[in-house]
Picture 1 (cartoon, rainbow, N blue to C red):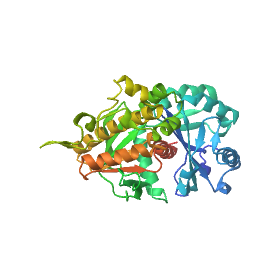
Picture 2 (cartoon, helix red, strand yellow; picture 1 turned 30 degrees about the horizontal axis):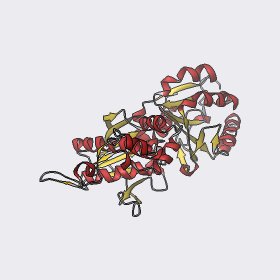
Picture 3 (tube, rainbow, N blue to C red; picture 1 turned 90 degrees about the vertical axis):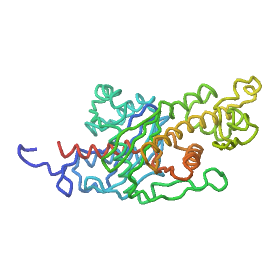
Picture 4 (cartoon, rainbow, N blue to C red; picture 1 turned 180 degrees about the vertical axis):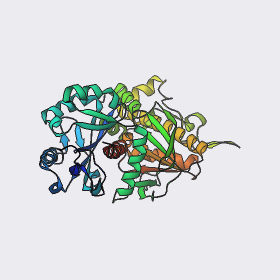
Length: 382
């Protein structure tokens, strides 16, 4: 390009400068890596080099559902007819275990990705952990962004741009036969809490579109659930652990109120149903109980333990922050309706209906989505 001549190829129709394509957002978590890819549909406006690169990516990413041994594109979450940076296209959502990052980098080499892009935007702890690997192995520069900024920005973007209803709650969560998903209008949600359940848990108090802060958290999260299940049952993946838990009975492992009181506990000040957990894994001090507990029972008890702890902390924070809406997100909730219903029931029961547990369809992809939006802002500074 001649000196002083504007680079019109990277300008959006509004005149703002866009970063070079391809446009990815990457959230590298402790357990799972999430990718959001914007696939433009207006390639006729691209220059020859860009069109060639985007066509190559389209052929590989969008014509496959799986990549290598562990990469998966969640096709049911695809968002079509989106406009980003003045370009029209679709958003694709892809995930793989962070433990397979070296395989991902090798795949990038094999598909000649360094020829197609010079940089990629990333958030999460892995953006720092793997920065040198990307630079030295595939010559890709990582533009790093704050993960909490990305999380909130991603939630707001997807909720407002998803043609399908993004936000929902569980009606009758305590009854497996009557429990149903119901739509929730999230257009004016403030104030609310975000409980982001990944390997660990972060809780954010959100007062406005750009007004939020981390107010609590716990190290007992999805990584804890998977780690304990691997130790207790010999399973290898999150999906295996959830499948085991689905068929298990946690009451064979936990000690309930009725195991202590013989039924409900009704005093003048406290009323507790007999089926409430009094002590997680409280039956496992008895040899006979240990011998009769199946891997499914242990997985279910582990899931209930972790979920109840998260719900308890979330409720206490909501009381302190004077917030009635609590939004649970993160990949811990993927294929995990057990935990969603437990959280919904607990929030409703312990608050006597004053608090509502809300959930979002895109669960763990908000950090990656927000990262992509931050990358678009970066383009205006280039």
